[in-house]
Image (cartoon, rainbow, N blue to C red; front, side):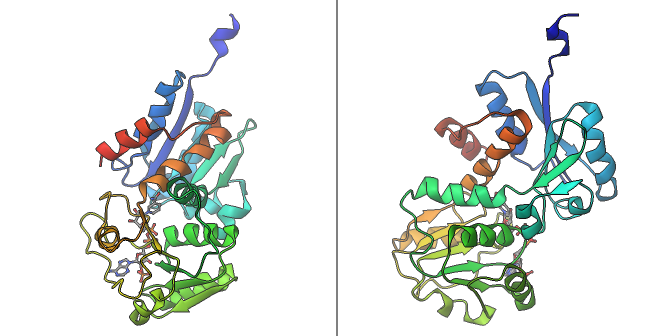
Length: 282
Ligand SMILES: NC(=O)c1ccc[n+]([C@@H]2O[C@H](COP(=O)([O-])OP(=O)(O)OC[C@H]3O[C@@H](n4cnc5c(N)ncnc54)[C@H](OP(=O)(O)O)[C@@H]3O)[C@@H](O)[C@H]2O)c1
C-alpha cells in the first residue's frame, strides 16, 4: 500500500435535534470546495439521550470533530474529556475537537464569531466607546456578553424579560454588568454606544423585539444576532433613524473559522462569495 491509501477524507459534522434547518453544512462544504480539499461536513440528527454515544463514535468513524446546536450545547459539558475556559464561562460547547488519542475537547467559538463580525463590519469599533445595552440572557447572550467583557466593555446594561436569568448571568460573569428591569428597557438605551439584541424576538415567525429606540443616540451601533431574516424589524428601525447596523450572519460565518484550525489545521476565509451564498439561502 502506498501512503495515499492512508490519506484521510476529512470529516466533521453538526449534531442537533432538529438539524435540517442548520446552515452549517452549506458553510463548511463551501470551504472544502473552495480549497479543493477532499472531505465533507454532515448534519446529524441526534436525539438528546444519544449525544454521548454519538460523540464517542466520532473518533472510530474518523471524524475530526463537530459543532453542536440546540439542544446539545449544555449537555456536552459533562460528556467531553476537557472543556476550555471560554466554554466553561459561557456554560456551553459549540465545537468539539477529536484529539489523536480519541479524547474529546470542547470549546465555544460563538463569542469569537460575534466580536469578529462586529470588527469586520465596523473596523474602527471600540467596545469602550460608551455603555453597551444587551437585550436577552440566554445562550446567545452569554457568548456575546463574554466576548464584550473580554474586549474590555466598561459598562454593560443587561435587560432580560426574566430578570432572575439576567441576574444569574451577571453574578457568574462579574465585571461591569448592571441588570436593568425589562420595564425600563427603553430608558436603558440612553447614552449607549451600542445595542445588541440576543433574544429570539425578531426571528422569522416570532414577534419583533418590543423596544423603542427613542433614547438611543443615532451614532450607536445596533447589532442583532438573529440572521433570519437578514434585517430584523429592530435593525430596520435603527437603520431608518441613521444608526449603523450589523446583522447576525457574520457571527455565524466567523464562529466557523476557528473550528477549521482545530479540526484540520487550516485557516479559512469569509469571502464575499461565501457571504452572498449564505445570504441567498436565507
Ligand atoms: N448569529 C449566530 O451565530 C447566533 C448564535 C446563537 C444564537 N443566535 C440566535 O439568537 C437567538 C436566541 O438564541 P439563544 O440560543 O440565546 O436562545 P435561548 O437561550 O433560548 O434564549 C432566548 C432569549 O430570548 C428571550 N425571549 C424569548 N421570547 C421572548 C419574548 N417574547 N420577549 C422577550 N424576550 C424573549 C429569552 O428571555 P427569557 O429569559 O425571559 O425567556 C432569552 O433571553 C435565536 O434567534 C438564535 O437563532 C444566533
